[in-house]
Every structure is written in structure tokens, then in C-alpha cells.
Length: 113
Image 1: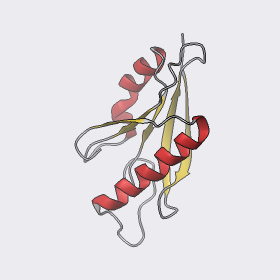
Image 2 (image 1 turned 30 degrees about the horizontal axis):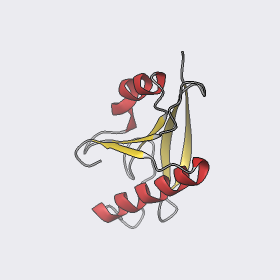
Image 3 (image 1 turned 135 degrees about the horizontal axis):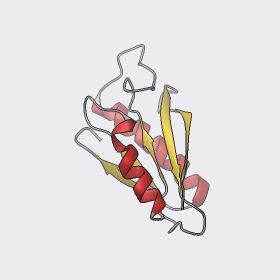
Image 4 (image 1 turned 45 degrees about the vertical axis):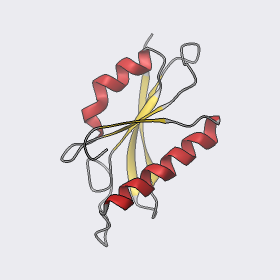
């Protein structure tokens, strides 16, 4: 069954606009778990496109995140690129995800992610 994708902006830890791409599985296929894909250094959310689509088709919906200063996410005006800032962004996203369906998301990452 086909999955749908859509892109939105999410306010990171300090309000910085982060780009997210959603990969939605058909409701009847979803296993209840959601994935958050985080890219490596020098990459962006597009690194996860094929993998995220295949997993969504198999019942694992999720989203791929452009980390701050990467891809379509905003750059930090005050140079907030410490590893903690990326962690805080992911924490804010995971909490928002948990608030929607009550289940903790599963993080899938490469190097920096």
C-alpha cells in the first residue's frame, strides 16, 4: 500500500524552525510504533527517504528530521550548534510525538543522529 509524505516546520528547542518529512503508513498497517530518522554529519533528511518509505510501507510510520542548520531547517542566529542543541531538538520532537499517540518513538540515526 502506498504511503504519503508531507513536509512541515517544527519549532525546535529554542523555537528554531526545523524541517520534518512525514512518512505515513496506512492506518490498518501501522504497528503503533513511530520512527524518528536523524541524519549524519553533512547530510539531511533526504538521506533516509528510501528507507523511511519502505519502513512506512511495512507498517512503521515515521518522520525524517533536518537537524538545525541542515537541509531545509533554519540556521541558528547565535551559533547554537553544540551537540546538546541537537539533543534538545530531538527531545522536543519526541515529546510532541508521544503527546499525539501516547507511544514513545523509536530513534533511528546515523553518526551525528
